[in-house]
Structure formats: structure tokens, C-alpha cells
Image 1 (cartoon, rainbow, N blue to C red):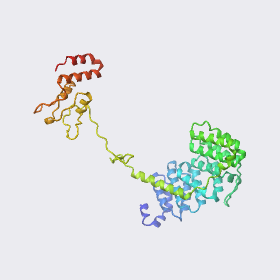
Image 2: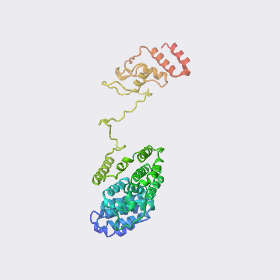
Image 3: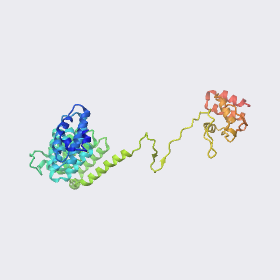
Image 4: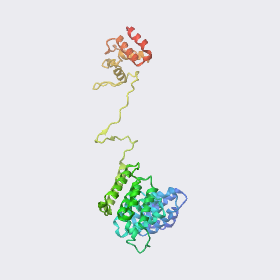
Length: 411
């Protein structure tokens, strides 16, 4: 009801903000989810910082089942209402440190794009991420962002470049930076994306820190026999660059150009909109709608299969514009004994059908008034001979008996 009241009087609901925040920590999971949705609606430019702080603090003690929803809401709030880039980075670094395994790919991609564009905060970012990586290196998204920043801005980490007033200088050697990447490479031995990012970062550090080049070459070469083709190819190529192409290595491994933030955000929004539209327009399997094939034609529904063994049905509709598709026609055509002549009055079954029914002991058609139906078979005896020879062919055990019947048959 409070969510509905938000559309009428937001200030009236804002007065209960403290109580709503307490409900986010309720023991009942349904109450927690309802309260989190309401908190998300309560956030605005004036209260975004205190509300975000409350949610981030609760992130440390929340249940694992609730962390995914809570992480998604915090990331969405921070991206939507960030007032300055430094506050945005601080909140995202906290989320990555606490619940980096629940952060979506597009979120940490956006974070990297922002760091690339914020030249004055690149040194602060790489130092903050390095410290977070040392304190908690088990969060996958944190490791990926930290590895990327160390590879791009490793010299800022080692030399304390672009220090902010709120920072305290830290002592990190070139060997320490390589150690961090090597540890991440070993810890995430199963994740291909993280390992690939570690190899790229190590290659870049080999150019930024020449004294560590030999050690990095040994680390990279360990993946030359990797069963994953992507990692094997990267390892072989990077090892060749370090060992044989010193003349072009510095220009090849320059810092990445600034990523177009506006263009990325537009592509991300378009991708999200396309996903939503595709989900809404996807036809339901139970709706019975027609299926579209690649050439744009409508695929007709499949026709029901005829029962080839249904010999007792004699009321199949007959049309003058198309040949009959009754089950008897299929079976007689399959056995090669002629088609039923449906052109006679009353559509009575032909003699060939009687022969088959008599042979298979299925029974016979009831006698109908009117002239007897004609048959395409020259004589009943010939029909029986043909059918007996066919059954003898498919029944090896009965060969002698059936062939004898066929040869002795006279009617």
C-alpha cells in the first residue's frame, strides 16, 4: 500500500523511512524484499547518500539468498543518483569487496569505462583496488577490475602518482604488483575470463616494469600447454612478444585509449531495451501462434499422421479435386496391389480391401446395397497370390507354408 501511496504523496511515505529501513533487515524474506523495493522508490538526490550507506552496511551481515537482490539495488541506486565520481567509485569498491561475486558483468564493465575517463582518479582507483585485493581476493568481479587497473596503471600504483588529499601513501614495489597478478592467476585457474585478463595485465607490466620481464615470461609460459585454446594462444603469443619483439613491445603495450563513455552507455541501454522487447514479443509455446521461419514465411501446423494399419475405416471423405488419402490407400499403395476405386457408387470398398481384411483376420465390411465395386486387380486369385508372396518375404519362418498357399491358390 505504501508503494501505491508513493504515486500520490511521496513525502508522507518518506516520514516512515526509518521504519522501512528496519524492515529490510526483517527475518521474513518476503518482508525484506517488499521493503527493499520500497526503499528503492524512496531514494532521491537528497537522501541517496544516507540510504546507500544503510544498505551497504547491511550488505555485510545479510543472508546469501538476499545479497544478490540487495547488491543489484545498490548498484542501480549508485549509478542512477551518483553526485560525483569519487563517491561513485567508493561505493562500487565497497560493493565489489563485499559481494563482488553477485555483481553483474555490465556493472563492472561500466566501472572500468568510468575509471578510463576519470584521469584524475585513476591513481586513486588502482591503489584502492590493490588494497581491496590484498584484503579480500575471493570476489570475482573485484579481481577482474583490480587486475585490469593494475595492468593499465601499474606505474601509478608503484610510484603513488596522482595522490588525493584523502589518501595515505602506500608502499608497493614492482615485484608486489606482479605477485598480485600471479596470485589471481593461480586462484582463478578455472575461470577463463579472469585468467585471460591476468595474462594481458602481466604482459603490460613487462613493458612498464622491465626488471620483472624475465619473471613474467616464466609465468606466462606456464600456460603454453593449457587445454583451453584461448589461454594457450595468448600464452604463446605473449611469450613471443616478450622474448623476440622488444623493439615494438613498448608501442604495442601502450595504455588503452580513453573509452567512449557516452557511446557505451547508449549501447548498454539499447541492449537492455532489446532484451526486454525480445522477452515480451517471444511467442508462447502454449499460445498456438504460427511459427516464423527465417525467410519470413509462416510455417503451417503439422498435419496429423495417417494410421497405416487402420484397415477398418471406410468412411474417409473423398474429394474430386485431390486423390484420396485414406489409410487403405496408403497400405495398398505400399503393398503394390492397386488403389481402392472410390469412383463407384456409395464409395464401397474394393475386392482388394476385402482380400487384405480376410487375410489379416480383421473382419469384413458389411454388405451394402448397390452394384459391387470394381477393382484395379485383374482377379481375386492374383490379388491373394501377390499378398501371400509379400507376406512370405517379410516372414522367413513361414516361407515354405506361405509360398505353398500362394502357388496352390486358385480363387
